Length: 137
Image (tube, rainbow, N blue to C red; front, top):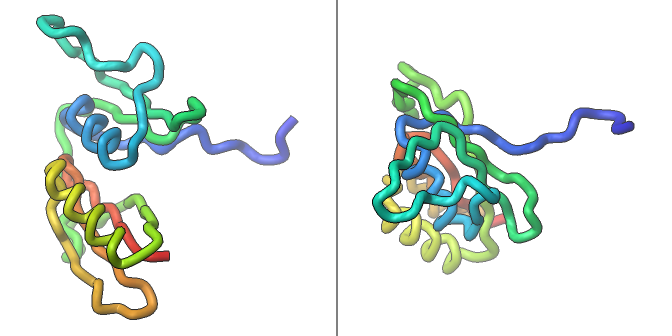
């Protein structure tokens, strides 16, 4: 018996579960949980819940289809973030490479704090407007 509950995965609301799952699958090098893969060509994709796993099969992220989603207005506080994901990289060069990859996948830049010598970082928004940080740790 575990002393504490165990985190299974983080679930993210989105109006396009497949597109957001694909974004994070590509960005983080994850794969679909068996049964959640994209449908064959010509078949409909009616997925309203998708899970991404790592190479060992551990759940990492889930995506829940919602009808409507109000993206955060961060850094303004009209609609706060409520949640964001943090990702670390080993160097400034890796930071720049992964920011560029994220943008090619459809992310948009919200904040550039690469001039911070203690913790250079970018805050980007994913396809659904959820902020995430990539920083040198």
